[in-house]
Image (cartoon, rainbow over all chains, first blue to last red; front, side):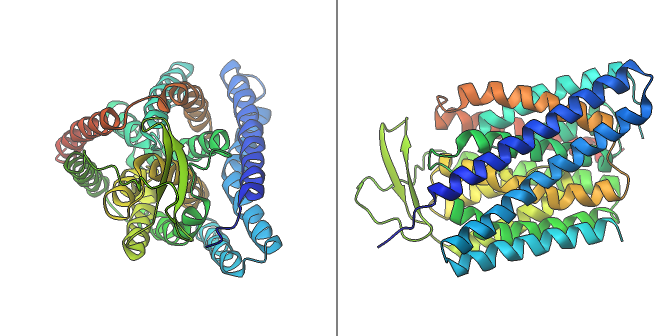
Length: 98
Length: 277
């Protein structure tokens, strides 16, 4: 029985998650700091919303990376499965901003 | 909607630290603690509490999973297969949540918390490990190094339809109640599908980021997510889950299950009391 090695995918997923969490946390921390200090309300709101969007985009990015990694491994079953997950997330986006 | 002050943001940050710490320790998102706190103690509307909690679930999932990659504890293939079901559930739940009364959501939260507590306690002694290290885990199974047993643990995934159904339900409940859904998936995967608790928890924690995103996006689009408080909660949870993760890998499984069950019973009772108004 050959269990295919997912360590490449594992590393790619880890990188996406790390970058996403770090970037969104930085935006949220600065945005929250600015909004608590008062003053630049526009900048604070922008940073808070960018932070939240990056936060929500991180798992989506992880799914996109998975689709491409499984395509690289020519594992079409998992390409299909991860593509369905991606389409469902697009469905959520459509339900949110109808 | 609550008026945002520095004090409120600080309280929400603190709640995030506690919820994140417990969440990481138990292998769940922490939302199961944060939602009752925001809804019952701070009197936020249930949907606002759920929306904030879902953003922290995403952050916890991403942070915890990023730290775990490379240890083979997360079963990537099983996770990605089950995500097809959880995200479908979270899409449905996010849409449904817009039509349900707060008392209905509170009772649902109470039921979910109680059921999971019972399942956890009744399965306390099960370990679900194949002791033969050469055993074939199959396409969806896995193997990982377990500190409790001091060896490599291998397992096979049994009853896949049950895992898929539990994942769909978990996704639905995740969006409705603002929790990760780990409280449903982890016991189901552990009790019925042959996945050891640690692997089930790691795989679930990995999946809930995508699951919670499916729901959070809908609350965000409907203007139910308060950005500054979500930021406070997310940052608090980052601090908390970082700390919890330092202890988590060393905590014994039995203790984890008992603590999780006890907390859920308390949460359940509180939710029912409040749903009566």
